[in-house]
Length: 440
Image (cartoon, rainbow, N blue to C red; front, side, top):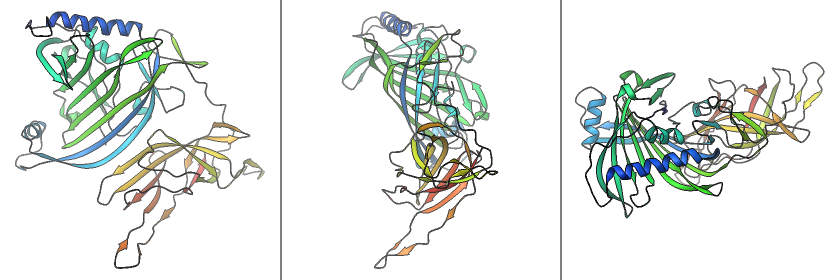
């Protein structure tokens, strides 16, 4: 997974058609939807939600191999149903997201909010920001888009009103990001509204004409909205989002993001949104200062609990302990004793589709127990262990391949990688997994 996408856009609506239907005057309904969204954005308190993203990448193959690969040809093949897909890899990411009137900031679950960019926490794969107030403000609170009445549409037994919109490049603030490069692009889309209540139900946005240098043909975001109670009032918030990116190399990224446990901010310390003119929001207090350890001390850790690839996600914390004490290189005195608890962050847990199926686990050390208090702690991955377990023969003619474990260094020195090959359904990493580290 390589592509990233983010949205920073704005537009207002002009109805180009006045066709009447059972929903009444389309212009009147649009005004009601816009007014309700604007009112909600004005009254919306600063809040935070838990964000869970399931990501998958697929390889697409044309049934007609004639012609060179291009976005136009791939789109034509896709529209004819002549592309076959094969799963390449999957992973999951968990983050906390804080939302204010005009911005969003992110953190690992339970940690201090520190970045406007979710890619700072999960640098690989497809992610998206701007899914909260940015999207709603973009649709209903500026003047970039032209809207068209489409008609009525039945969805899950409800009769909804459907509108289409278009935003040309010169009025667009939609930014598609690939690697370190950013591309502003035109886009179009639709939204569904409940004519009885004036509530927004679904919003879909699709890019138009991404440049070849982006490596992508198009990206589509679909947001479903639901009412959530905050501060004794109900607000229309995203309940889930679907991101689909069709890449020029024929691969497809498909993300499903689900938002849960949305609540107002509580806590004692403040973190600032950079563009809120000095306003601040409260978040939980951070940990105590870290230990003053000399750099370059080698030590070894042992994981205390099992890691189930079916339930653990990037962003989760797992517990390990020191298998070897950390000693001062000069005095040989013990700085951190053997058995001290270590908090380990799972940075990424990736399933590489087979056969054979592979599991890739990436972890980073974050905190250590010093005299009963967990304090920040940083280390670099040490020399890798390489263990190749030879297939063993069980009674009878069947041969069973046991997991292949290859601990290895990653390009980020603070991350240690474990690679498991030939894994079977139900595979889990048992307690007792060990790895070498070096103090920073």
